[in-house]
Length: 247
Image 1 (cartoon, one colour):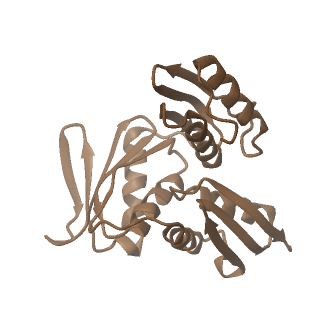
Image 2: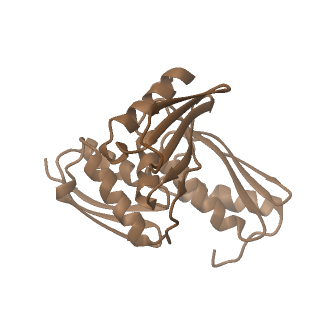
């Protein structure tokens, strides 16, 4: 923030509230966000309308918090279709079993104190543990083979209509250095996976975590899906939407 980080808790809340009000991705009437400052913690709470709002609110909070405070993100997406814990867990498992990228992975699920193996990929396979330990929240743990796999895993969870939050604890083995190119690769993969989007009509570029999206779409719905797909990828802070509706 060019003007410097606000010093007091009141200054921080006021500055961040103003940033939320002026951000075109955040509609505070549809997505009321509560801001609390407790010591060195900046806490965001509330239920918001989409993942874009989640990403933008978190990015702005980190910008305004500076190095003095850590951001504790408790925001949740308003579910399109509320689901119970078991149904949400089953939907998450189904998303992985239906995705060829994860066909060779060991897939496990956790219910209470019991862990169950859904698919055994063998001793050298990556492993993903899916759990719903808090209503509406899908927790992913284990290890995957690349940053793109880690990002795709989270995006698949956001596509589930009952998902309110994703706790992505997946590790990348072997570790990889992150970059805009890595984010861009993941965005392209997610767009290609979405049957509601004609990815071959789109051009994607990423700089400083901001995705530049160009090309043609047939409808406003396709445009909305494409932009939403970009925000579903962790590491994306904003989307510069230059899509043209040609239908």
